[in-house]
Length: 177
Ligand code: 4NP
Image 1 (cartoon, rainbow, N blue to C red):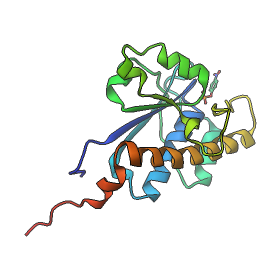
Image 2 (image 1 turned 135 degrees about the horizontal axis):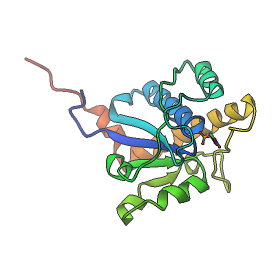
Image 3 (image 1 turned 180 degrees about the vertical axis):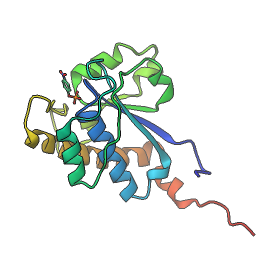
């Protein structure tokens, strides 16, 4: 139970919702759990297309996730305008999907929720796409996982400032007497 605050709701978005975004959701969940922050988050992922709605993650994403000890349990779904109401942060994998999501924003408040995930990657200077690995090899999925891991670290650093996440950690549920 989180007595402190609403969960921070984060949605990861790619094109098909079978490769990058479910892997990003799984890796981010793994990272925040390691950091003791898991209870502060609600996570999901979606695709801007309807190509794979209802499908499980790609086998290569499942296999890279398994290397991290993560089991991906996701059923692909399409991004919908309601997601702007249901999430605080919408982290998109590349600029094409970023444009597609922004095209559905109904207000400045909606627009401000949308970020390119890789802008939180400390090793990225002038290229902020997580490359699409769908037509690639397992090494491309490995690269995605490394980018997402670094971006997860950067995003949590950002949230510590934006959401005072570290002060939330200091507070504990009251003792029962
Ligand atoms: P994702 O990868 O957007 O990372 O899930 C893709 C999955 C499917 C397709 C393209 C990219 N597709 O063209 O079907």
